Image (cartoon, rainbow, N blue to C red; front, side, top):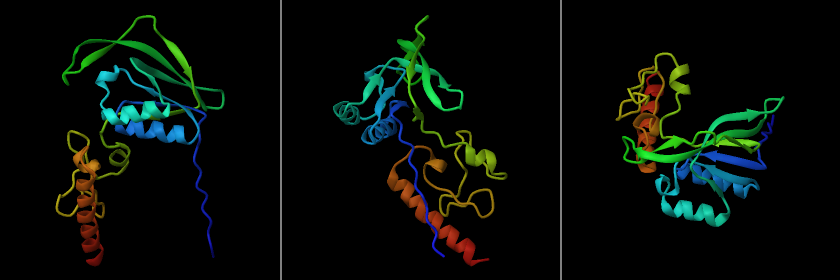
Length: 194
């Protein structure tokens, strides 16, 4: 019997991407290409954007709206639980923090709202904690990365293998591909022994 799968993409009309890295630029440009008015919401200035300069340039060239020195503090929803906007505050740059970048400081009385129907969070490079927090016996290190054997991807939970950014933190695609190959070999050996 044939099964049909429906691939549904939510297409927002007005989208905010929260973050300033390369992933944020990719998400914003994709939303724009799908027809949305798209905003990058970032709490620091353009000079502190972690995205590559050419990524920022291309995003601007395509028409992405940059709401810089802006920090979202709440996602607003309507009576049905659908996104209707974000509440934000204006920021100013203070003294440098541990990373060497100037620390964003809230401007008092600067609260405002942006009307939207979609919010994409593109923040940080830490692994999603959902897998480790919902999988008993899967251990993580102090950076919340999954502990796995580098040679074969075997984790602390039997039959579970991992590799790439979930294990190492942010790294290159090439390293993730190598970890995937090692994990595939480990999985094959595990299943062959059963």
